[in-house]
Amino acid sequence: MVPFSLCPSHPSSSLKLYLSQFTLTPLSDLSGRKRRATSCRFVVLSTHSNPKILKSNRRSRYGQPLSPYDDQEDDVEAYHFADVSDDDWLLNDDFAEVSVFDVNGKKSKPHKGNANGHLNGENAKSVAEKSFIGNYDHGSKKARQASLDVARNGKRATRKNMEDRFPRLSEEIGMDVKWLPLIDYLSTFGFKESHFIQMYERHMPSLQINVCSAQERLEYLLSVGVKQRDIRRMVLRQPQILEYTVENNLKSHVAFLMNLGIPSSRIGQIIAATPSLFSYSVENSLKPTVRYLVEEVGIKEKDLGKVVQLSPQILVQRIDISWNSRCSFLSNEIGAPRESIVKMVKKHPQFLHYSIDDGLLPRINFLRSIGMCNSDILKLLTSLTQVLSLSLEENLKPKYMYLVNELNNEVHSLTKYPMYLSLSLDQRIRPRHRFLVSLKKAPKGPFPLSSFVPTDESFCQQWAGTSVDKYLAFKQRLLLKEFAEKYERNG
Image 1 (cartoon, rainbow, N blue to C red):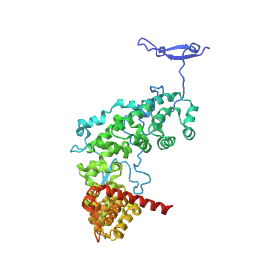
Image 2 (cartoon, rainbow, N blue to C red):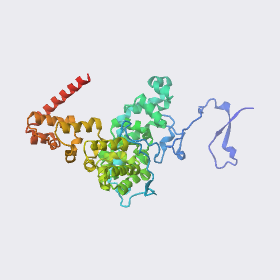
Image 3 (tube, helix red, strand yellow):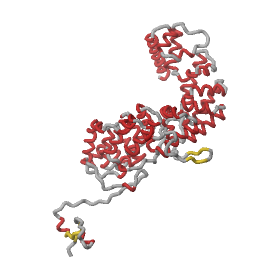
């Protein structure tokens, strides 16, 4: 019996039998034809994939199979990472998605927009905003053409060549040669082997992204103000950002930020500070957070842009938990009224994610230990909430000791001039004090803290009566002397 193969022929409407749509061809006749290689394909599904639109047989312009993750149509919701440095002792674990929030025991479901239109992106966008968000220059990709040329050659790289170039990747994670184009492209942003291993461990599918899709997304981020030097840090913190489509994710989030009143010049900085912003739904998470800030915390809509610029993390924080816990703490600990706490949020919203036990309480206890009562502490924190972020050992304690021992001031002067605590001891307080002493113009008794507030020009004109150059030369000599003394002590 001669073996046969079923090969589909062109369908015809006049055929009477279903099986007649196929032509029986001997396998021996196929010897002269180009045979299609067959292989077993394995598709990895993730929470970022939409199974309805997977097209696993698509190929790129380089002939490589396209990743099923590149054609997603929905916003990506998973993998939320806290956008804070791991070594920030002031922060805690209050970061999570806010799909609904609890108000007075009732769950409030997010609405599609705000009644006054403030959060309605379609109504709030101006022509300039649309241009900023959507019309980025595709021609700018020429700057990266060299890297794409390298990517096109990735297909030709042999496994031996790949192992020579990336020995750790090949040995530790079993690097696929199909990842080479993307790895070569990301290398233009300063990525090293260790960075790719970090990406693999955090979110492996990010290394399967088609290089052209990744380039389109990163080029868009660059076009809205993200600095090239920030790309590596962003991708390492949030590798899923390579999977977020421009049309269905990135643009909508940029529009959301601009509708809060954030100027286009600051958009890139906010994205770089909080890349996980893109993993939160605009409608189901970000807008409810903003509504909570307005309706429950009491932030005015006109102040939202300022608050977000000061602390972008507030958008990806469990704001209901953060606000309620810190409001309750400050109210019970120092008798802070609600309106005073709202002022603190407007001036320094970062304190909403400072740890209570390791951040807020130790600083309040320090202020008590130097003789301040609760009303003085409240006044100081309302005026200069940043005090809650200052180091006790390296900042607050040395400044207090200099205040009482060198400047002959008492602690109550801090309530009148709280800014003293925010100024640099080495760069401003000590040089100005020593300069006036050297000129014999330092007043007797308590040294005036108001002399530390103005600019160098105003200080020299009002207090020293000399030129700025003379003061800066004195300051430089003082700093060099102190550095030499510190070096000798540590040597």
